[in-house]
Amino acid sequence: MSIITKDRDFYSRLVRIAIPVTLQSLVMFGVNVTDTVMVGSLGEYSIAGVALGNQFSFLYQITCFGIAGGMGVLSAQFWGKKDSEAIGAGLSIILKIAFSFGLLYFITAAIFPYEVMGIYTVDEMVRTEGASYLQLLSLGYLFTGLTVMIASTLRSVGIVKLTLLTNCVALFLNMFFNWVFIFGNLGAPRMGVAGAALATTICRTVELSIVLIFLLKIDTRIRFRLQMLRRWDRDIFRNYRKNGVPVIVSDIFLGVGGNMISVVLGRMGPVVMSSAAIANTVFQLTTVFLMGVSGASGVITGNTVGAGEIEKAKEYGKTFLALAFVVSLFAITVIQLVKGVIFEELNIGGSAIKVFNVEDSTKEIAGTLINTLSCIAVFMTLSQILTKGILRAGGDTRFLMIADVLFLWVVSVPLGFLAGLVFKWPPYIVLFCLRIDEVIKSIWCLFRFFSWKWIRDVAVRGANIDKIKPQAG
Image 1: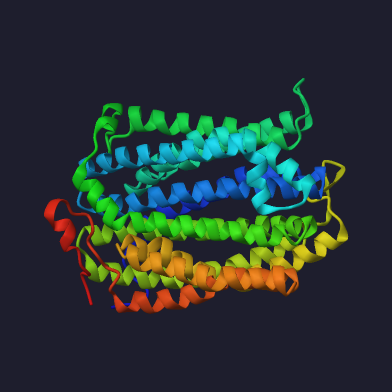
Image 2 (image 1 turned 120 degrees about the horizontal axis):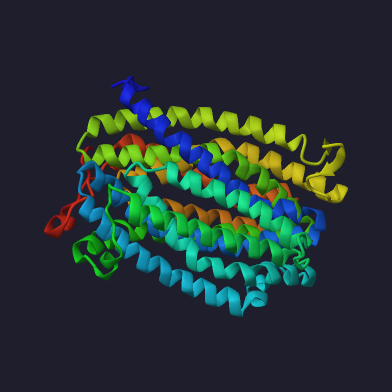
């Protein structure tokens, strides 16, 4: 078996999936970061408020990714068997689950925004700004979950360009409406951070409209229709409960763990939180390349295992690991290049513009945090491709649930709390402690990969659901 596959079809599929997913992730990054950057001129409190408000939104998004990812494992393998009926039945289930969660998050953020922000910070100025942002943003939760479910299902059957188009539309609309509502242009009121939330909510509505029109009127692979929402396929749900729920549990615990990073850094003061928001923005820019390879590894691995091509799945997996190393080196290079210009005064159209208008102390802390994230990039890249791509698509969801929860909550979160709130260590050390689970998890999952116990055909129905076992030892 080759370390790097020579299968030309593999590289053709990789390019067809990875490039659109990478571009989609880049555009999604642009949508998410536009709010932070465009309120950057309003100062540290606004930056911190938007960053912390987005942490609650991130928790909701990661819940959606868990719901969709759990069914995505099944859908990718069902598509390998060309069972589109099962895929449509699965989509019907997760749409209803996602809307229920969206309603819960919406009610919480709309009625109790100030209380939610109190979880992340004790600074009154940051809390007030964040609450103003979060309350308007919450309406978009009703739409975001449905969009994620549809986009994830379409990706599992190889349709990836649609979400790229959708996100491109959302990016330009978000920039335009941010300009209108944040700064009060075209006769609109000057709303500040609340304007950024309103712009994002408008974009979420447009995104859902586009994917719904495609799903119901254009798609010929899943052939989903609204009357299918009345269905609740018990076999598919039992399989989802067995193999998909561990993905939801993993992603929710990861989401809450990500929020713990913000809780710790947020309670170290607005300067540290603003610095962390800037550093995280830079780091997110590099993860878009990881998302492309990770997304492709999930789809290709799932389709291959579903088709019963076990040896080919092993060979493809090794190739993805090699790509992970290349992607991580590229990410580190980009991080350092971007770090060198974000605080400089840029001449654009004859005007001097600063991306982040912050104090020198914020710049210094942000620089050290960016360097810390660079050190973690190699491990995080390997971890993400294994946990969110290869092993998950192979059906090894219960093992990954343990890996995601154990190291984060037994090591990273307690160590981070002690480092930041008890020992008062420098922010860059605190951040490393909060992210150390990525280092441990990447090594542990690498051993799991070479055991081959992760290869499981989970795309089954009826009594066979309880007989799922590894396909190779």
